[in-house]
Image (cartoon, rainbow, N blue to C red; front, side, top):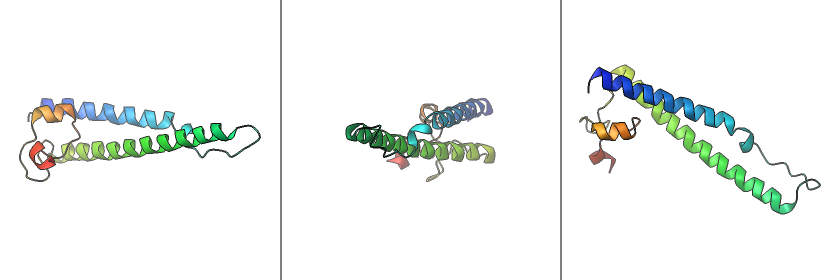
Length: 111
């Protein structure tokens, strides 16, 4: 893979990282514990709030997992190991990297 293509994918990874960090900051309030104030909020509203909080926490867990994959891919770029399967060492197909530049394995090893 040539340096120009790696630069394009690195730029995309950095954009993905920035977007995830912004989403994480924007949803921070929704992940906070739900107050159990029975005077101002009814039982069903509280249950909805707890369910929404649980969904936000899971979404944040997935964001963090994706951020870890992005950081690992950026590390592989800086080490000159980007584009090679971590399992077998073969080249990862360009189409696969364009679809998701954070992948670490070729399609054969990923199965």
